Image (cartoon, rainbow, N blue to C red; front, side, top):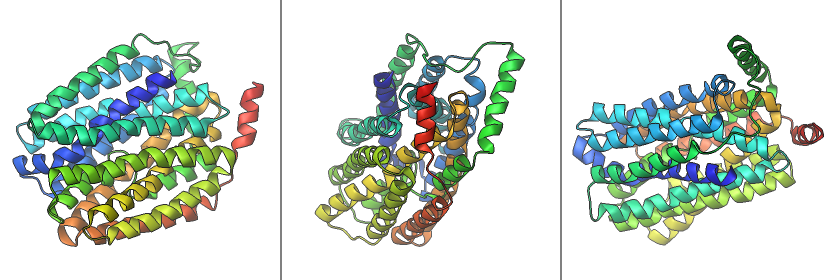
Length: 395
């Protein structure tokens, strides 16, 4: 299951990351501004967030593997529609379909992994995040190469196949460590409602969701994937190849950062390690905000910036898993991703507006301050990892 979830997550990230390289050409063909790109991303994020919030109700009724299978087929349909989109509204519809399909990966996928690996959740989730970011890493040079031989529409058609394959493969796997599916439909619905109610009353759960909400960059489909390539193209005038190399630095950092901080969070206090990574995220974001052109310095800076900002997700997810009992974990991850991603449209729209009206430096400077807010929120949290793990091992 670990390998299947890793590959599936990587394909999901590949689909998202290729948009980074395609946006400058989609914007030119469909007449889109930065604000229009922000609106598109915001709509997709809202759809994905709402859908992510409902999987805690679905898992008592349906196999988690089948949910992931249908989700990947939904991504395939949305990707195909994206290549056919004749206008901006049609592109919104297409990307919306893909977002609904991709919504299953995070809450359902992480719930399965946390059930399978209770003793080293931080490392396992870090591995899953980093392997998924290999898809992100591969997407940048591959999309760059494909743009040299075909248009952005044809690229959508080609990558549709990967999601179809992943969707079909999931139907051949069984869901071990499943939630309790005994009893009537009404009983299972009550079970799901009870799980959501317990998680909403869980102090650590609510605090860590707030930390996820206030962070302005570093999450899937967010500022890094949307605005960096247009910034490098429009503000610095870099070529396709140079942009591809620099975006690869962001992708590489998103592989290294979660691995390092995920491993450390299993060895030391998760809360303290998360505060450390948020402090580094603040410094890295502020540095990149005011960095001028210069390929070597940009590459190194973007690598470190991405390593810091992308490490937050792995650590917050491990804390969510620690906070929930096994029967509540699907609801916990659904709520976490629902609440955490609800703020993404806000940050995407604010960043797009500021880039159109005040420039990249102002936009990213604002985002850097969000990590300080996250550090403050974490000061109210207790690290409950070890009692929970011991309890589950005994059970």
